[in-house]
Image: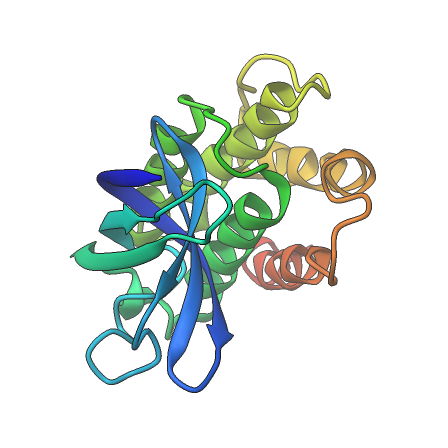
Amino acid sequence: MNLRAPAILVSARPHGETAVIARMLTEREGLVAGYVAGGRGRQLRPVVIPGNLVEVDLRSKSDNQLPFAKVELLESRGPWLGEPLPAAAISWVTALTASVLPERNAYPSLYPALKAVLDAICGAPSARGWLTGLVSYETLMLRELGYGGGPPPEFAGFTEVLAAFDRLFTPIEKHLLAGTYGDVMSARTLLRERLAKIDGS
């Protein structure tokens, strides 16, 4: 597999002493994985952060070999990882994407949707400016993977958005994350706890 394209890095798992296995969402190829040599080193550590927009260059000798990946930072989400609520939202939406999508299956609508959600999380002054987008992304993912989801929802206020977020817990856990390794839903639970602090619920 040879590919050079913008990508959203959605997970980075340590491998060996200094490398990482990075999973990245691209618009045309879907989710791809690559071996990033030195990914845990001083130079690349700020680059291989889930949520970051990168330019990825993947090279492999065969389809059965994990490609080697070179990544260049295009846009960093690092400044928001020190803020509890945006950090929880970025962690959840990237973990969901990394855990659910099969590799090398194109879902062209998911890439711009995920980028828009991340941009909103980092650009809006509060969750009231991005939670609707996150709920729409979860709904879109359910629809793209064949579990209904319906059209993008419309809401009158933040309380309705939060109620919709709560209703999506069961279908996401039951359909999207059934049989996945690890407790991915804990990231969503943490996000909900932090959302409650601004909603007062």
